[in-house]
Image 1 (cartoon, rainbow, N blue to C red):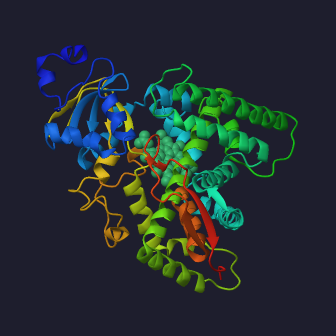
Image 2 (cartoon, helix red, strand yellow; image 1 turned 135 degrees about the horizontal axis):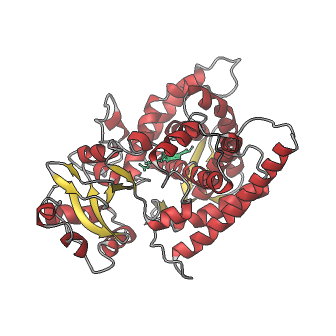
Image 3 (cartoon, rainbow, N blue to C red; image 1 turned 45 degrees about the horizontal axis):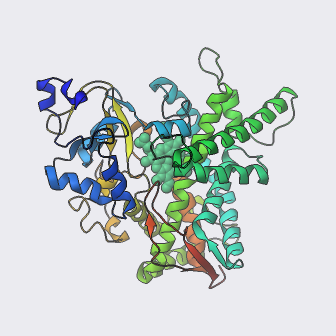
Length: 464
Ligand code: HEM
């Protein structure tokens, strides 16, 4: 109330509708209740019900006055306006991912480090470099799982996507380092959308301990790398850690250890969590929908039949032919809403959407989930329907699984490649049988079955 009052009558009158909720906690209880009770869409739904389809609402969340944005045009307007908005992530996210990661970097520094780190992971050349490794890794994992009996499918997929991202960022990491990192990331993620309460029993407390472990493992790897460089030991090939160590700005300044570690913590996390979840959900949806499965399988069979006998594995050209599979993945991205919201902060007063005011200093939450589940944008939004993407190109702002603008996910192509190659092998030779097909879903931090998709992977045919 105090923050609203300080705006003055004129500015206050231009705020979008909404209310600041309960003292201190604001709308956090309603948010947590909606997500924990299994109906996440009811959170934005309650604003629409009470205040109409304004598309923007005011609320008090994560200890800050906040504008919730839930229409394609308003999301686009905010995401494309770097003069008006900076990143504005909740305290817990910044504390866990790192205050020197992209989450808080000023514009110029962000642009420089983003250019340095995004080029080696996106674009055809980069993708061709990793394709062989991804192909071998997922094929081998599926073979192993089919001999293993019951597995936690999501946990195993996380290991695979982690193996891939570690290969790109820290080529030489040994198995023990990798396992230690991977375990800590699981704990870290459970605290990422929590309140930043560092007391035993709270999710954030456990997550913060996991961050300390990550820092110590990465510091060890960085020390080894620096010693090797000082001694002039030969390098097998240049990975992302080397690039970050050697990067210099125009004044000759290099990144210090803290900066390198925070950037690595961010990339290693962003680079495996979402891809693993989407691979799992896409597999589950395919298995639950025999017609979609059959159509996707037929496409992969055709692709494999046209591979020349001299070619080993699939190529980038084959990947680009996977049109229907790409629709399955887009529909999974829309339907699952792994990144259900993004956070910004207004650097100045900005007018959006028919003159609503986003006051300077207020937080902005971009509700991608609200856009993706809006029946006016996607008819029958709760139906998993890959065919809605046939001959359809989404209007800007309506499909935001990877965000938009200067913060667009730099790993979007890599993620799609990884998920496609996994599904390619799965469709051609395997079947998923879940132990608890109607297992409860937990929506925070990301939607997942609470049993981590306990299942058997069975080999049904040899891949040709
Ligand atoms: C299905 C998989 C993925 C999804 C759904 C996803 C989603 C997103 C979204 C929505 C954002 C934008 C956040 C914002 O607007 O502030 C983002 C940013 C980011 N993603 Fe991804 N991502 C995925 C995979 C990856 C992969 C594989 C990598 C690494 C190789 C990655 C690295 C990043 C990084 C570093 C950022 C921050 C970019 C910046 O601030 O400039 N992501 N991702």
